Length: 71
Image 1 (cartoon, rainbow, N blue to C red):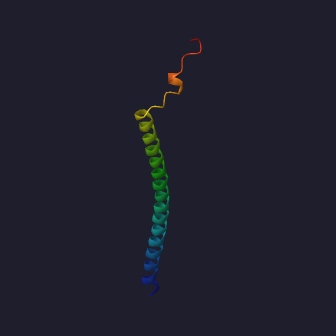
Image 2: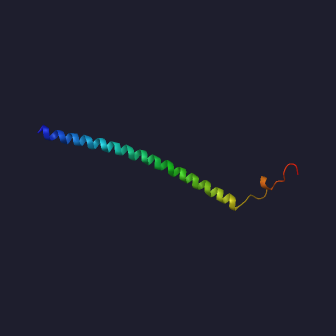
Image 3: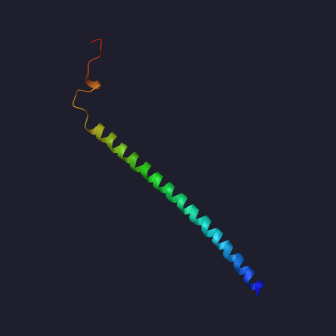
């Protein structure tokens, strides 16, 4: 009876080890996905702001419309 139980317990241990490894991998990948999602959202927000700044230029009081200092 112990000879039949031993392979089963070894298989169970092997499965538990594999499950623990996969669980750890899933948690790490989830953290990476969240991090890159935040980065993507930030980049998209910055891109929208840049596009908006190009579409609607300032009201003429910015440095682009000032005469040079020697003028």
